[in-house]
Length: 117
Image 1 (spheres, rainbow, N blue to C red):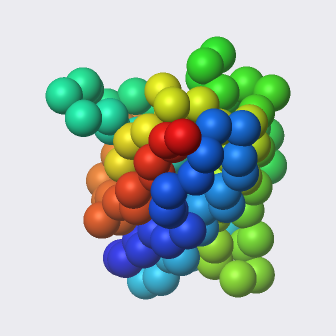
Image 2: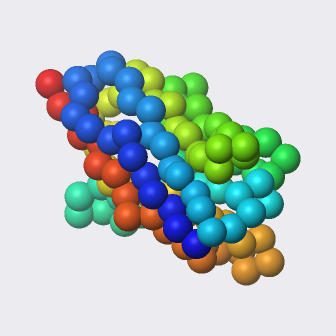
């Protein structure tokens, strides 16, 4: 199993970024997938998830600004981030959710998002 995030960078407040998570080594369409972020000096924060059936969920802090999606044919998870704020600055990870375990079993290496004037 491998998860590889990309698309991070530095952007001004109000800007946009699109993160990608390329998955390999497993049947991508069979798993719920999540985005989690960790800001400097803080603990992990759940951001968003998309289930196998396409249903989506968002943290209150990002709802209305971020959009999660998946392309099962391309084995890729996305996070479209709009109206970025300084508090969105963090390392963003994608994770594979295991329903029966109620937890994550694999993570990517993360991609850095910095929102700064």
